[in-house]
Length: 168
Image 1 (cartoon, rainbow, N blue to C red):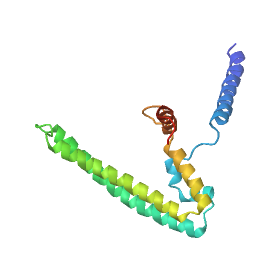
Image 2 (cartoon, rainbow, N blue to C red):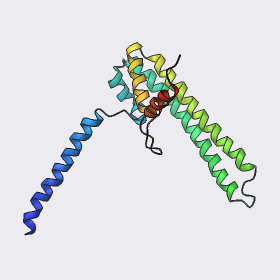
Image 3 (spheres, one colour):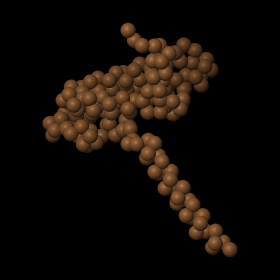
């Protein structure tokens, strides 16, 4: 009796998984490169058709950015740890908490500025067609669905454009 249900059950699960995979691929198409993929120089070399000189230059830029971001992250994390200690103090961090929050925000902002400068430097290494492709990849990557709000910045931007009307 159990054997009679096992084969159809397994077949149904396999068919369901196959249908999910086919539909997901049909609906989503080619996946959008994630931020991690854009940090992978070999991925960029393949996608953009980079020369050896461009690969070396971008690899150097990536290394420099990594150092800057590590520093920003360390400063932000240290300020966050001190903020936790200040909030746990008897005074509940009055005054000190605001100073530490500003320090955390400053480190975060400096990391974002370093990233923007890095993107500009990478674009400067690329030719016109590579730059166009890189810009598309960056835009797609930046507009991935937001994990907190379930939307995407592309949908948000399109919605805002509809609300604001045509630009003059």
